[in-house]
Amino acid sequence: MLRRLFNFASAASLLLMAGIGLLWWQSYAHSDKLAWSGDRAYTSLRSAQGRAVLYLYHADFPIRHNAEDRGLRRVRENAASAELERLSVLLLCSDSSVRIVHWNRGDFAWSHRSSNRDLIVTAVAPFWSLASATFMFPLEWTGVRVRRRYRRSKTDGLCPTCGYDLRATPDRCPECGAIPQITPCIDRSGSSLSLRQARDKSAPNPA
Image (tube, rainbow, N blue to C red; front, side):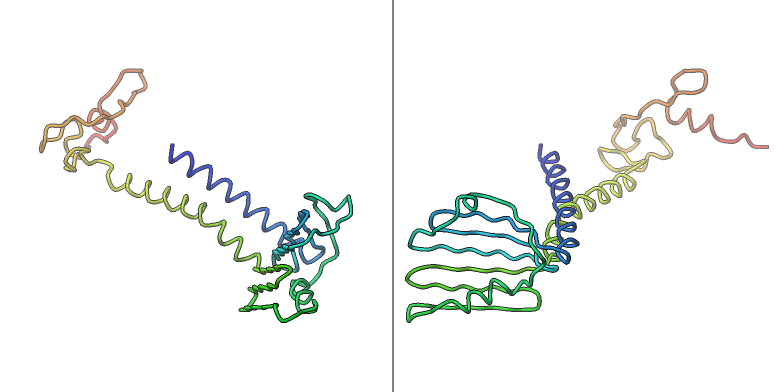
């Protein structure tokens, strides 16, 4: 069950990474936005020239929206800078209750503006960081498969009970007496052969 869940999570992460890559490539031509509008809140997530921008707005008073702007909607706009939301926050009117915290490092940015009337949070992250995060599950899945195959190659020809080398005695372990479960070989006549018999039959006769 856990293996199936892990395989499903790996496949879903791979599809998500492909979707992020597509948005990354399209973000330089136009901006895809997913927005939700409520009575006292507005949330949007959009692509902006190689980066993803999250914008959260919550007010202590009702917000007026057009009827077509309410609820969840997807909008495609012209490509715009990722700094658009942050600059709009800085240009808002402020009073003594306003507190602004801003952090910026490379392509990453985060800002928090709070007051007695509203709360605004913006977060910016490059698409390469999101793609790297979604690549973790497929990478781990590949690593598990490689390690499993490597362990199988290391244990071929060994007794599954004690680990004794069975290349000379493949039918029974001389150390612990265990009989390994070996799939019988079928010769050309259709008769079943043991592993030793198959090896002896396939070995070349001395001249």
